Amino acid sequence: MKENSKKITRRTFLGTTGAVAAGLTILPSSVVSGLGRKTPAPSDKLNIAVVGIGGMGNSNLMHVKPTENIVALCDVDWGYAKRVFAANPDAKAYWDWRKMYDEMGKSIDAVIVATADHSHAVVASNAIQLGKHVYCQKPLTHTVYESRLLTKLAAKYKVATQMGNQGSSDEGVNQTIEWIQAGEIGDVKKVEAFTDRPIWPQGLNVPKGEWVPDTLNWDLFIGPTKMRPYSSVYTPWNWRGWWDFGTGALGDMACHIMHPIFKSLKLGYPIKAQGSSTLLLTDCAPNAQMVTLTFPERIAPKGAKIKYPEVQVTWYDGGLEPTKPAGWPAGKDMNDAGGGVIFHGSKDTLICGCYGVRPWLLSGRKPVVPKTERRIEKAMDGGHELDWVRACKESAESRVKTKSDFSEAGPFNEMVVMGVLAVRLQGLNKELEWNGEKMEFTNIIDSDNVKICISDNFTITNGDPKFDRKWTEPMPAKQFASEMIKHTYRKGFTLPEIPA
Image (cartoon, rainbow, N blue to C red):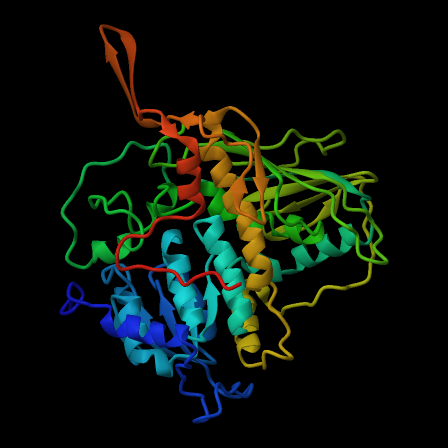
């Protein structure tokens, strides 16, 4: 089953991507020879490849499978993904997405990326560079730099894109945006959001190494990040809580919960960030955290019914929730479908749940405003994926963008992973100032250092509690922050350059 998984070279793949970088076109099956890419007719079927099929990738696959061709499936864990391979016998099976692109690049039209967070950017960016449409699970990327890269690559290659925050296509988000932009709650200077996640273990010490199962290619799972011994604690699901692979509860759920904030208030890059948490460890995300991001005043478009003043957005997770505002209905749970958002307006307060579900006003009023947002049928039950399929079949010149097109999802995701940066840099004990255009902190100086807890141990000795915490040596904060903004990839995994 693993015949070539350990012997794969990148020679042909690098030759292919090198040709693209040189300006040549790698043509898919739907191309008219010599005329470049041909936009498929709405009745044509897309040839779709899926990378990461054991979890959400299978859900995405199932939503597009009835109308499209699934031609290739790729996963590093053939034990976890066995049932999906078996259910799609006509799709060619791969361990390594690089080999899949090399062998099947000409017959693939679009790629669904549902790997662990740390591999999203490298899989998606190379697909885009090959001219493939991309649907990528949330969070879009692991870093700010990777988000900026996917945003600009998608614009350059004019492909159809969608982040997998399906609530962005649903009715609650539509209504929240419409109510706020219609002026129903006035101007907003403060927003609070939270999730009940994590529902996986966090705050853990690094586990001891174990033998790698025969059905898992650990080297390919590690992908672009640094090698570490395998542990069953990491896979197939709990990787979200480990910094090298995931982005904790914030990265998992903020793309669902905070999207109506980003879109309704027309946010861009934050200018300030501050994070705090339960004990912060070098390798594992904390049990609970709080992040405050400050966004500058935005220019209101002509005819806008509200202003866009400077706004503070505060995030809570791990069981923490905002303080209930005055007038909150006694006994009403703030948690709706896994989290919630409170928009504090100058005229009223709007509350919605995770995915923007069931928005309501604290005053009890029921707004009736014009519908300005495009509606997606059955958004949470395949409509989000099928809207991407629809966009793939439209010409770039006349394409209606998806609800979470990378032109929006990229900048939004930068907001999300900025929260991760704020938490991991909390040891500097100051509010961080951020230059979004340059992707750099402006008030971290050369003499700033951080040290982080490596492991947290506790014993009872003669009836007394004994704490044994091991810490890193002080690390240069600039270097540490730079590596989190733009990762150094492991040999064999590279990103395209950011287009000008």
